[in-house]
Image (cartoon, rainbow, N blue to C red; front, top):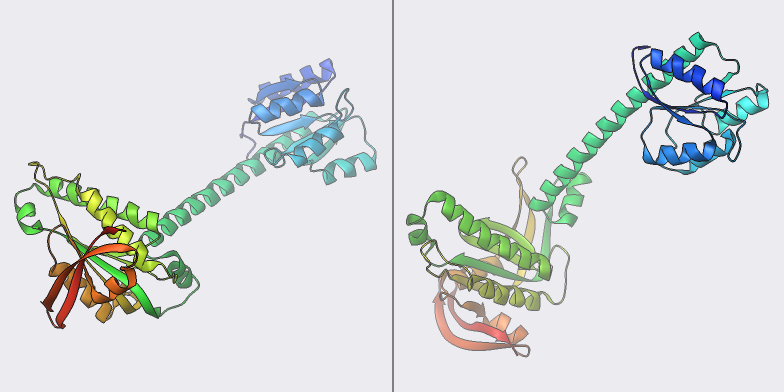
Length: 352
């Protein structure tokens, strides 16, 4: 037992001579002491000041020691505060009642100073160990929350939950999703004319705005590769309105880019492509893992972007057919799509 531990101790005692005796003894031992003349005053003090230990009398006016213990037990901020009862009541029933109500110890009056010093030291040591344990648990919880936030920045929440449950291989097929690719027009020439830090800040501003849009429309950002941005609607939680959600995302991206300029004041444009169809989605890797998409739908959406027009949203016939009653389109016509052959495409213009 470490008897050198000092604490802030609250004495709750209505007898002036007993208070003075306790104060003198505790101050000589190096403790900080506060006084309460009755239980009601003690509760008020405990609710506004932090104490390490309470020395509590039982027989007091207004609010006796039993009522103080009951009030402390009902208060989540006070229930763990250690209490040593020092009372003229030395009947076994009173001792048992106080211990059952949460008191750490019980000493009869007149108390033995040496015994009280030992009991106080034991209580303060237990509090020190309890405080260390609580600090350690808080630290663990903080680190767990950091890890959780980091995991959710990498993976969709349902996928992260499956990994935490121990599922090793995650691969799911989705029959109907909308995939969107976007890239920054002329990024190579823009990057050649900007300082690295300025370029990174520009990209971060653009993609952060896109991330906010994705959150607003409930879409799943898959990844960024250089100046490419990939997002999908309809997974991992299926939803019937994913084409509309992605369309709103694309139009929102166009609106955001109106305010974006290089450090020389030149406007920056994006080229956007969309397609609807089936995909496979899953987690790959063990250390630096990622959630990704595969399939022809992804490839076609990528081609809609790479073979699109600066500042435009190019979509396939499939997208057009799904959204033509709700959105305005301009027909681009037949284009030759790399590895896909000839395809009829459209530009998404806005909502009807």
